[in-house]
Length: 84
Image 1 (tube, helix red, strand yellow):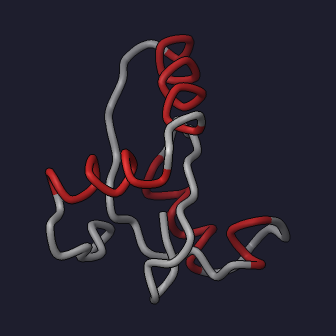
Image 2: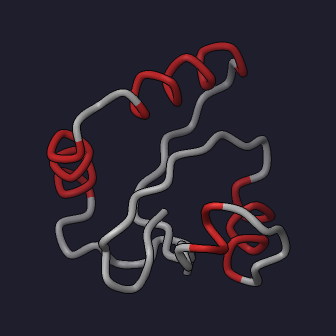
């Protein structure tokens, strides 16, 4: 997720993507996404195994920002909000 300026990147894991995106968009919980107004879903991956999903989350969080941007732009060149 990112904000309207694409200046911040947030990576997380959830078992219900639609619900979690809605929580971010409506600022349900205080924290990073609320503070930096991350309400635009620009990339996601699906996984059937929670352990694998958490491992992937940790991997992506350790990536350099440029690597994350390249990954996003491979699938979403224009950074459109995929939650629609």
